[in-house]
Amino acid sequence: MYCCGRNTLKQLPISETKSKISEIQPVEYFKEKSITIKQVAGSKNATIFLSSDDKLYITGSVVKQFHTIKLDFKPKKISAGYNQCLILSQDGVPYSFTWENSSCLGYTKKEFCVPKKIGKVIDDLKTPSYDPDVVQQIDTPIIDKILGCYLTSNFVSRDLNYYLCGRNSFRQNRETAPVPVLVHRNVIRVFGGVDSENVTFETKDHKFYGIGNKRGILENCEAKDKIYEIKFLNQKKVLSLKCGVSHALALIEENNKTVLYTIGKQKRCGLDRTLVNWEELNFWDNRDLVPTKIRVGCGQSFLILSDNTIYGWGYSLDGQVPKNTANEVLPQKVTVPIQYRHNFEIQCGTATSFFFLKAKNHFGADFYNLLTKKILTDDIISTHPCHRSFIEHRFGLQFAQCKTILETNFSKQDIETCLKWCYGSRIRVDQKLEGMVSSLFNGLILSKKPFKKDILALWADDKSKDFSLLVQEDSGYEKNQQEQEEEEEEEEEEFFEEIPVHKLVLIARSGLFREMFTNISENTNKVKDYSGKTIESLEILIKYFYTDKIELTADDDPELIIEELSDAVEYYQLNANSNLNHELKTIKNNFNLN
Image (tube, helix red, strand yellow):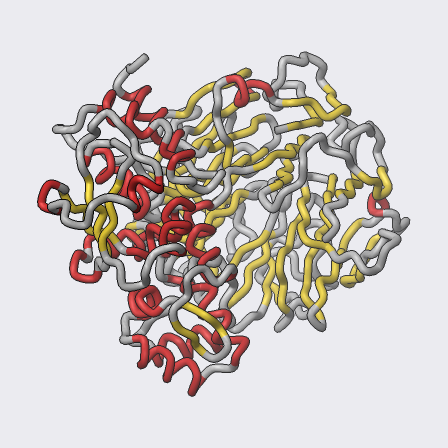
């Protein structure tokens, strides 16, 4: 991880004490402690980090250098506003905290750097009052999306209700909403920025609306204190939208090509004027290159192109665009000393910029690779190779029924989309397609069935397990492949204990098993494990394949489990981004093992 920008209150996690850092500096703290970061959220005076082992760290403001935020829940996502941090738990409960002062926490009694549950919302579109004696507050519903902005905190529930707390820019009164209040129904996405007074949301019918048009951006209209329609974006395939303090960027797919659009003050983008309508922005020379990712802070912007070239521009008086401390920085190439990969990420605070490789979603990628690389597929739908048992589990019907429904009612492209979702891809599902799937597959909605929970359900489904690992205690001698093949057939299997498992899960999660199943008969339903590990350790490892977690019972010996699984990543050829070693390290720390 590398960073640059404002460092007046130690917003940057580096040893350098200068208030402005214009040269990209490495963040050594996480590297020294073997901490892998999966999310970063920058604000005005602080930066929050979420690690792959679900620890939350903050630096800057009143806490100065690193402080660990205590959590009594498992976090899923973080988002920072101007002076507040929002945290979404794995089970959809929103929490928030502040480190200075904030009026958009969702509650009134606050303690600095202490996350509290946002327990109540106002689910009433008609009553403008926030007084609990006038309008009823209800328990907060399950939340799917969170977004921190300048003076607002934003939430979208699982039933697609959009709530906002903080500055009121959409109701008749001008009071600050102390708890999240309903803004609109049937909302699927919200967009904004850490320093943005503007919040944009997309409804289920793919119309776009704005709130808080204080700076005259997003749409050429006079509506500043009410919800207004952003007609330019309506019915367009908006891939991403980011708002700064006085400009916005959007990636829009047009004619199978991604186009970069912008609106607002453009003096810092190479245009000496303010755009009151959306216009295409294309300052790079090679027109064959397309934008893939955009990030926006207060006034700084970053763009990544399809050849991995990074451009930065905008306001950079504190050095947030590397190698610049100017009021107006034209688009320039940014060099980051990180080998670019798909998990390369840029995140912006008000005046800070972070460049890092985030912890990848290796779990979903393991299963998705089965589809894209056509690994040991055993059937086909339309022209797409797939796995019968996996399709049955995900769609909840017999394979023949799934095949008939898909091929009869869906185009080849829609079938491909459905299969990608089935194998764990995080895709944006078209409303029409989602409705068809829901009606034809017993109410199944593509975007709402959690992939990990569905794989976890496989672990408990013993009837569908089609394979067994035969485990024998270590004899002190590890046999090679040839010796295993030459074993006498008459060896009694009852000396081995069995671990039932799904063949497909082994193939997805382990390179060793992928290679093994490539070289054995398709009808083989048992195989002996010669790793020398105990059945207790192997059962924990096999369950990890389903859950992505190492879970111990009171009867397990943590020291023995850690010792036996310490080489599992290499031995079983797990994904290079596997979190297994982090899971073991967490257990080691929890039990104070040296």
